[in-house]
Amino acid sequence: MASTDSSIAQEVWRTLLQEFSDVADASDVTRIVLRLSMAVLLGGIIGYERESKGKAAGLRTHMVVALGAALFVLVPLQLGMDTRDMSRIYQGVIAGIGFLGAGAIIKLSESQRVQGLTTAASIWLVAAIGLAAGSGLEMTAILATLIALPILALLSGLEPLIDNSRE
Image (cartoon, rainbow, N blue to C red; front, side, top):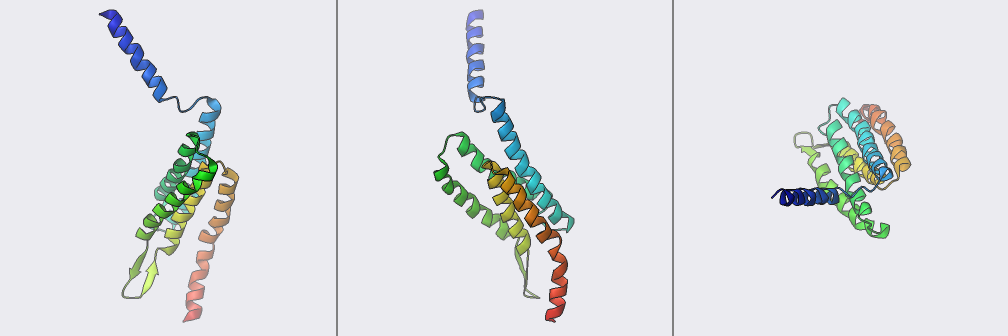
């Protein structure tokens, strides 16, 4: 009876080890943690800017979008998908994120103004940043974030001036 219990326990243990064998060594763990963390950090930077302006999609939304996009490309790469076939993954993420961005856009009927386009665009952007980070293009993701941040943070001050000049 004891040997049966022991063999069952050993089989369970072997199965558990197999299930968690998708990360072979420390370099794989480092790569995964770096790519996912980079996506979260960069998405969080843009999300913080949106949150500080009181936008509906803020810090957490942008972080989760970037993380999800990174994961959508990281997993197929781990499974050995050819990089030429990754275009289907990119297309799916880009199309899917469009629905999330569309939810951020509203039209105010009384003023005929549309609100949320910049937030929708920032969601779309952090998905692209997440795709870059998840694909191992961390420097590209960093540079995109550094270019986007002044656009979002500084140029919004010009909008009232442009609106006043139109009137």
